[in-house]
Image (cartoon, rainbow, N blue to C red; front, side, top):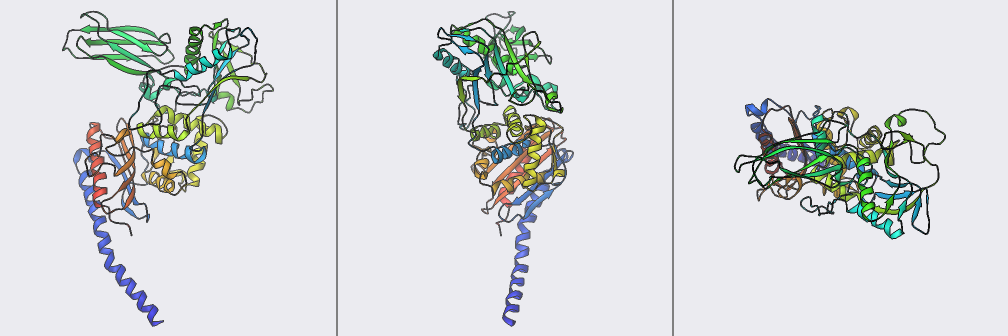
Length: 529
C-alpha cells in the first residue's frame, strides 16, 4: 500500500513538473496567432480557428471554434469524405448509348437513339490521374467521339428516330440555393447534370485582328454552334491594354462580348458555362454522328427528371424504371410519351475510379464535380439524385462521425452557396474522424500539398514549409479558409481549421495572414504527449 502511494505521489510530482513545460509551447502558439490577428485591418473581420493534436486530441489553440462561419470550398471536405465513405473509392460511372428500337441488317435503327448519362464528371479532355496540375488534351469531347465510333462499328447507318440526351439519373436541378447570379456565366458556376460534357463549359478564344479598328477574332470550342455570338470586341493599337466583358442572360444562348483587344496581345481564353447540359450533349452528339456519315431523320431532344415530380406523392402507373417522372422534351419544348420497352445498350463508356475524381475536386477545388458527388450520394445511398437527397445522406454520415447537426448547415456540395455555415470545430472533428477510417489515408492524399500542387502550389512554399501541410483551401468574396493537417517542427501531426469571414481587404492580405498562422502552428505546436 505504501509503495502504491509513493508511486502515485511520484507520478503527481512528475505531472506537476511537466505541466509548465507543456503549457509554455501552447502559450507561445497562442501569442504568435494573437500577434498575427492583432493587425487593425485583420481585426475588423471575423476569425474562427481550431488547432488540435491528432494523436492526443488535445486542443492547442481555439478562437471562435464553435461559431458558425461561411466555409466556401471547405464544404468540399464534407462532400468528398462522405463520397469515399459511402460510395467507395473504386466506384465507376457508366455512360451508355441505348435504344428501344431495332437495328436491321442494312444499318437502319428503327427507333430513338438515347445517350444516357449517370453522372460521369470526366467526359472531357482532362488527363487522369491528376498529377501536380490540371492537364487537358486537345480533344475535349473524346468520350463522345468514342461512343460515336462504337455505333459506326455496330453498323448504324440510319436513325429513323430522335437523338435523345437523357440526364434523368439526377433531377433537373442545375444550380444550388444561395449561388450568385454572377457565377453562372463562368466555369465555377457551371450547371449540374448527370450528362456532363467538357465540365459543361465551352472554351472561348479571343485574338486581335490584323488591324486596329477591326473586330477581334472569337472562336468557340467544342460545338461552336451552341451559342450565338454577339462580338463587339474591337482591336486597338499595340500597348493600349486589354479590357473586355462577357454577358449572358439566364436562360439565354446569346453571348455578348465587348471591349478592346490590343494588336500585340497574345489572346485570351475563357471557360464559359453552358445553359442546358443535356441539350448541349444532344446537339453535339448528333453533329458527331452526322460527321461519321450516319443519317438522322428525327429531331434532337432531352429527357429530364423534373424536381417537382420527386417532391410529390403521386403514383404514375407507367413511371419509368430509372426513378421519378421523366419528361421528354422536343426542340419545341412539348412533352412526348415514353416507350416502356426495355432498352438495349449499343455502346458504353466507363469512367476511372471515383478516387481519381475526388483528387481533382480537392486539389483544384472543382465545384461542378463536387455537386455531382452530392447528387450521387442521394441517388446511390438516399432517396433521390437531388441536392436535398444528397444532403440528407450527408447529415446521416456526419451524425455517424459524431458531428452534431447544430455545428453546420449546408445548401450545396461545393461551397459556392453563401448560405452554407459550419464551425471550425466541426471541420477539425471531420478530419480527425477521417484519419481513423479505412479510407482516411486516400482521402488525405487528395488534399493540396503546400508548395507542391493544387491550390497550394504557390503557398507555404519555402524550403521549411514545403510538403509540411496538406490542406483544403476555400475562397469567396470576403471569405478565406484553410483546413487540413500539418506536421510541426516537434514532429507532431496537428489538425487545424482557419476560417475568415467579412473582411474587406485584398485577398492576398488575408491569405498571407492565414499562412502566417499555419507557419506558427508548424514552428510552435508542442510535441504530442
